[in-house]
Length: 483
Image (cartoon, rainbow, N blue to C red; front, top):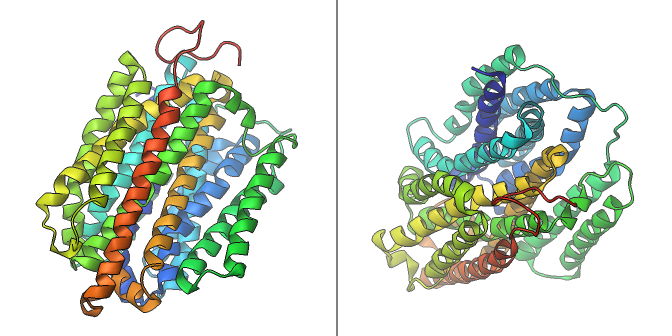
């Protein structure tokens, strides 16, 4: 096997496993909440803490790898991810599981950041975009398949802790393989420096905003929580300003002067906001309202996974032939149709049969599959070759950020509809005694959330459609000549 394919195989396993764990935990969350007696706040941060750490550290870890060596930090990331998984499997309570998920997320961030850099080093410019795209698509497939796999494992006799056990042998194998087979091929840039202020403003702003959003939804909206949200947004705004002034920015904002890059990133972020909370809502609807067990809920989500995995490779193949704009736009429109379909299902949702959910779930999966690969290809091929590593990191960061915002939005809408005790019962899959009125309020909030997400997907289609060839370019995905 050529060395570049060794790198691609190992980093694809890493991306698959790291993103798999964002959703494999989600489907098992009601079981985890019930077993550990976790609060709703802890329940959401079991998911969000992992993603927040990954999004916050991704770019800085990429910079560290440029300084100290990519293979070295990539190996550390796989080892840390494996250790974090082992710790999660023995967590005694909700708070400790949140903490161990942060350890696991730190390892995931090291894997993500260095995977893109390693691929950039070994693949020539003519193949680099596809290699990076395949790596990211594999990660996205992992997030989708994690829904079904997590339900099957959590609902089996092994229990929810088994969703972390599977990472241990894979992590040990992949860490050893990377240690013995991967070698440093990139040039270390010892003059580079980190961007601590930018990282603090970005991660701190996201954290403060989301904490304010969730506390406000749980406890009630007052000036303190609105102030937290405003402070978070101000920090993110300050981050954008700082990035234009520092010598070594966390994000290369100059890339946004490239039209195809800017529109691809905008649609990527909005699409992530639109679809990120879908899985969370379906999980709590299946287990918290329909009172399904985790195993059955995982099986019910299979149409979503199958449709995504089916359309993902097809859209990647045809985008090389006809371009990305039509496929990416169509994917977002199909996703919007699915979300509106969910939002218009007749009440009460507790009386809906599975057949009524099959089509919108399949459409949601197909829409995601149609969008992801063409979107990644358009971003990477619009980026000058020397900067594709950082572009890939920026894309992954924005995807994770959008997913965080979507989860925060979903939690806030659901939490605002019912008291904290009712939310606790729903999150633990024990809502049978909450009464029809409170259940109707909760499912009504789900209706509203689906409609909001549908409109966001429609908005995402606008920048996706604006991605087009520029004068003087050749082929569907030519790299801009002037930028």
